[in-house]
Image (cartoon, helix red, strand yellow):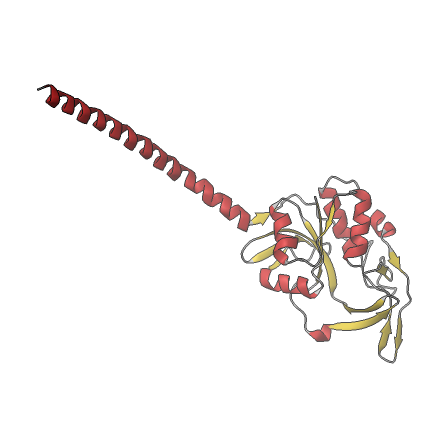
Length: 245
């Protein structure tokens, strides 16, 4: 009889333990089901990023060719720096090599060395400037914090900084898609040959999703472009990108 009672007590205790185990696991499963929408939302945020409060500054009427410094002004102002496009236009490094066309062989400045030509008006010859002088100028306002990530992949240089909440200054073309070779010409400059296109442009990228890239255009013409073509155009222009830490 004693053995039977002990056996029944053991069975009873095992039943209680199993019920508690089931309740505890049920609670965990319920918790996972409650959390799953949050997990999905986080995944979506990483693949769909928009930074909505980057200031939109227009380059005209003061700067016919000032897209690069105007885009830099947007980036710096978002980072908390009080600076305007006109100050940056005055301070950006210049390459003052004169333009010359010698029977179809072109000689001019190098945008990798400084702003080429006149930044203020189309009434005078000019072109633009690339990432090196822009990063150097930006460093004056955010010393030790500027990241010139030119030459990296589109994901590393553009998408990842955006996912961290940092807009990205880039060089692109005004059509936001890859150009045919006929759109380019070669200049001979004091520091070597460089390929240029008259549709060269600069914007601040502010977001992306699976289909589009979103940006602040200093010409005020576009707000988004198809992502595949945009990336191809960016690569074609040398994969130039600047942001900050």
